[in-house]
Length: 351
Image 1: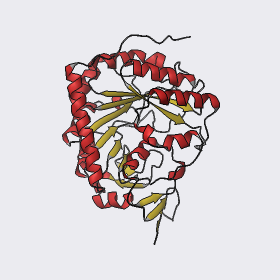
Image 2: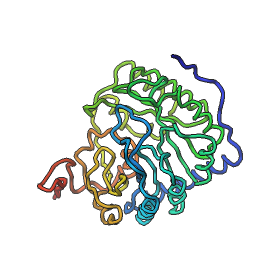
Image 3: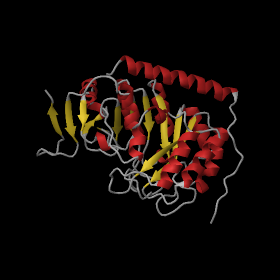
Image 4: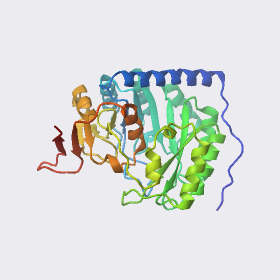
């Protein structure tokens, strides 16, 4: 079984798309300006409308195959709570968000709060009519992660399967599309990441590259072949935001990072049960209902050091936190996973 990457299908920037891209950029610049002016609100939240996914990638721990969608009235209340907190960017993830039957209402509600609306999807369920509905709902950003050129036992998110979907997006999508490729543990052919990135750029999308580690979750340096591909993709995508920090570079070298994680403050992860967590890999901390989360919680977590931060591999949390890397030394610390009777995290005040 083989796959030849097509040379056709590049996105055409119509006047409407140019206008939408320009206004989206202005809103993004405004959100960054607001974040620089005040630390009392989240910059980004990932929210899960359903845990179920139509795929079962071997490395993923963020899905199941049984969950029902969160009822739409509850989802709208959660979006409104994020609006109450002043959240600048709300990204829908999962599971697979396109399985939620009222997804368009969720996106429209995000836009109504004034936030930028994003979505992370595997792309399998995209069709022209569905893409047009996403346009109408007001989606600003979509990210699709493609793990390989040909499907294998680790991942079915392959370019062979998804290329037709990418061509549909190039033709119909008015929102920004980013294609994320990966290298690292479990990826059999590192060269695939370069092929995927070249195809994404050829279609007129942006492209990023991430690192997958194996089940141990430990930082491990990239091998020579992986490092070569990593460097080539980064040369292709030098305008990517990740070029302006060293977070991914340290991960590629198997090194830890010294940074101030603002999870729980600048970044929130809201699970399908409506609880606020630090991130997808630290579910259970602080596990506060979103309805009860306040500006005081945001400010406290902004100043709380997370002891898991040095070995963290979650680039979105780091990039959000990077906005404030120059200010506000953290005055307490928390160790996710440390139990004190009830299972609460350890919180130590630093004098």
